[in-house]
Length: 312
Image (cartoon, rainbow, N blue to C red; front, side):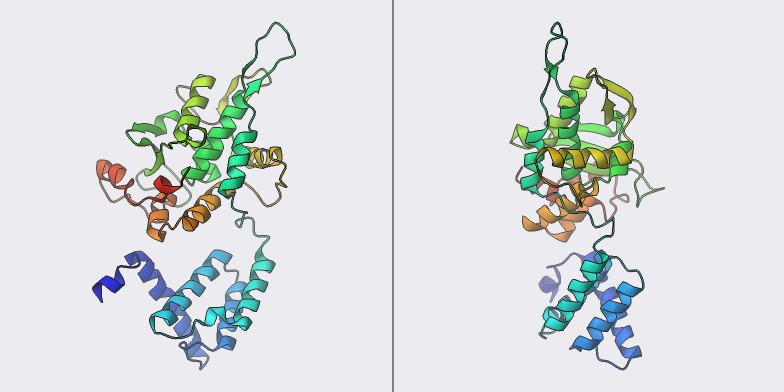
């Protein structure tokens, strides 16, 4: 039994248990048995969640918990029954306009976007020699760092040079504040070095900083028409625009994509690569590492971390 329990992280199992208890209580209050779940009861539960304003991610997690409990009991998975799937598809379609449900930027399109970033700036003045295109270098760094580090647009905007530390395996990004960490110690995010320089977030980031002559202050900034880095940081909405422009350059329709597509793309691609929920959570910081000492947090963050197995 001990080894059977190790197939999921303890926090994941606790989440499953809490979700299952909620579904059980909901069923009992309506005189329905939770296992095996009656399709009508399950669709009623899903409808209740959707009508009460639950996000798609929350409803999806509840379905996963119900699926897990039935499978552990050797019962038929009710989430695959036609009636349940029909209602779930309808909920997803109805709530699909939710801004938080940005389309994930997956690896093939990410690579296209990287390759479409301009590399050389040609000036109308014949006396001015061609220069490396700073905006293109910044966009490559923004795309790769945002994807591999699974950062929110607010975190990309707030990043300073002092938040970056070299590591033998790449870099470590220190996030003093984030959406889910307003008062605790800084969260640490690893940025692994890739064997392919064209897809390496560390190479892209250092190239941008070197070309722009940035040694302190904001990491991601605007670029002037004269190909010089501006002093101020990019605001979060500008990062949305830059991601959409990067996708437009590939010839794809940017509708549905945003800065959040980088974070969503990391999670989706990591899942496709076989990463566990715990490994992904180490990078997305859905569970904080704040209680561990600084050195231990840096070193342990590299172990079983989805960012080190992206295949870039």
